[in-house]
Image (cartoon, rainbow, N blue to C red; front, side, top):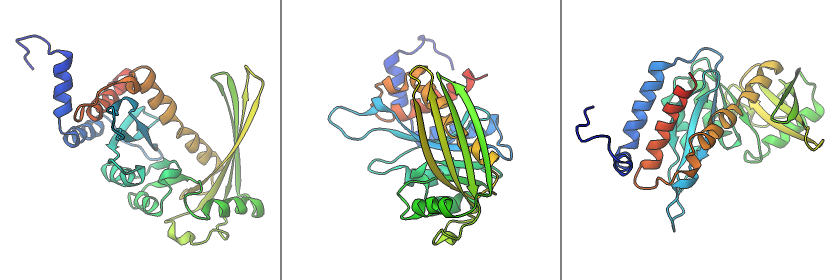
Length: 277
């Protein structure tokens, strides 16, 4: 591009990106990721949302919230989608999944995405799922907890990590007996139940915290694989969202006009990939 009058001003850039069609720019972003990267069998794809805190106009409740698909092994955002106003991630995740080629991959999603239709969509894409459990699926979490209380564990794996001033030990226990799960046939290809017992020791304070989380998965009862895959889900928080906030100042951005916040979030993710080279 020739710029005979010099580089445009900050305000001009902002006006241009506030007017660009975000759907078209998103399509270009998706084409770019497919051109520079191919998913391999067994790749873990984490799906999670991030709010652009500075995008709310004064006196307005609406704020831009983006859902991204992250391939942590290669440090790249595969695609992203804005959550519609007055909606939530449950409606955005299926649309994002439609955009991606996930054959042979393992898709991890937090409890918001633990939905029967989303599980079926992932299986129909020839991928596998690991979905976090909370109280949003009726009695499913309670039935999973009861399964670990009364049924035999099939596989166990333990991992220990140290960093950021703490030591964390995670024990993954897996059950492939689904007899206590009601309506289990509604969860397509459901094969196992997972329990993660995490213990964190903080060196500075000497305090220890414990946490137990539950998941369901279409994968076989391989505790080692499941433990690593679940651990990788935090990569989207630590390796992507945290860097976007700290290095790119995304939460401090005050781009609010038109589509500026949404479009600049795409540019940040393109730049993020180049900084990883």
